[in-house]
Length: 248
Ligand SMILES: O=C(O)CCC(=O)C(=O)O
Image 1 (cartoon, helix red, strand yellow):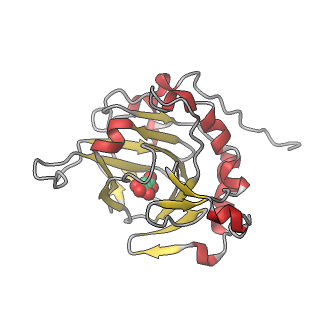
Image 2 (image 1 turned 180 degrees about the vertical axis):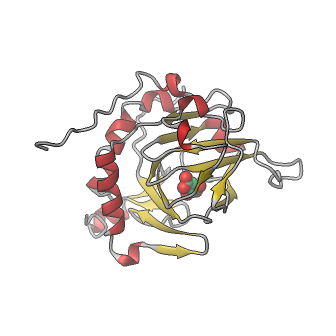
């Protein structure tokens, strides 16, 4: 664009450079995954999506693309271009490092959940389950938020306190995979402000873009939107055959 300086996105050469080493295997954090301009385009697309796309839940609202799963199965249908470019192309440049050693086929994300959290809203600790290949790629928009990671007690109940906290800044990418995906739970606390954020309590502190946004360990919550990219394992070709789900 003439007269406007475009932000240059410099990606780390290897995911290993951005691995969150304090966490169980595996999590990666890239602070500047998309530019401010790309962030604004995505926010606008999300905001102007047809109203019925939004599902209002008690503590957040949600869009599901291309569609909800039925019995853990996705009806084959393309994601709209605004969800694939630039995010999926950039993700694919790291694909080989993300997938498990014995699998060699490229896993292209085929499902995106968009969650919007107002200050004070969140999501209970949970696992994402077996419908997905165990990798989640989360792009954060609008504001920072903390993802808390919980272990399970011997009886299977969720531990009372999170073991780790990951701070996700706007325009960042967080990849969680492997044991961290399968053996631990994640959640977002329903708070208006975070306290006690520091290099000891924030697992990805060294990888943050702007730790100076945190003053005296405090960070006020603002509206944060996430795009979580996943690969649904079971895909039904019915949708593609009928040709009715491919509209963008
Ligand atoms: O918004 C996030 O970062 C987390 C979303 C999440 O846990 C989920 O959709 O299962």
